[in-house]
Length: 328
Image (cartoon, rainbow, N blue to C red; front, side, top):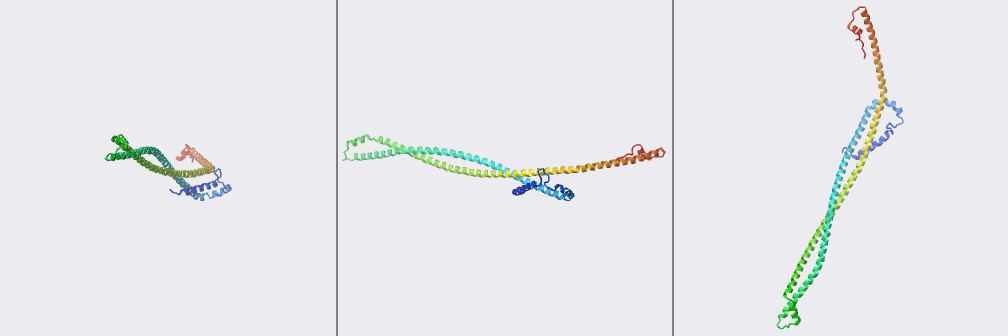
């Protein structure tokens, strides 16, 4: 940029301030001694015209330079504002996308927590059955072993109760009990696997949520930064617009003053031109009269010469036959 924008604004403000004291409300010089100084100023107009024009030209050049600088700066600010607003819209889209992902992840997390809770409740229920079945199976196996030991002893005498228990407890019942136990153990292993799987998924979802939440906060921070930048650009734009309006207003006032000055000069010059034109016409009429008088005298002399029978020259013949009159 050709000039520092702060200096341009200061220069423009200073010029506008001076302009307020250079003319009155009608744009005419606001000095009390204007009428008195007119005659003296006219005497020095020729001597001061060139320096004054140079000063005016330099002043206009400076104003135009400031105007160009401000316009270029305005374009830069408008571009910054446009890019900032586009970036804000992009960030808004990213924030909405992150929020949607967060909501989806939270829904999944809640679903897995519900499933984990149900699995834990099932685990507690089945674990009780599993423990009871395991205890019963161990006790039954021990009883069977004890009975086998007793029945294998030659000296042992079986009681009626033992014989009843032995007859009631068959090998098929034990196998059924063992089969139920194995099914429960398989089921318990599956439940524990599900608990582990749900726990891993919950942990993964929580990690993803933390990442998404950090991302969303980062996007919020970026958006706040861009919004501040856009607001600053808008504030600068308002300031530049104010200065541009001030320059345009001052130029329009200067143009109006110059036009008024040209009209005044024309009005002052017109009577003089009219007088000069009138004097020219009078001078021309005087010369025409004088020429006509000379032509009449010469024509009369030529006619007298022709009447006396003298030989006429070519110019004398022109005078007699009307070719000798002339005018400016």
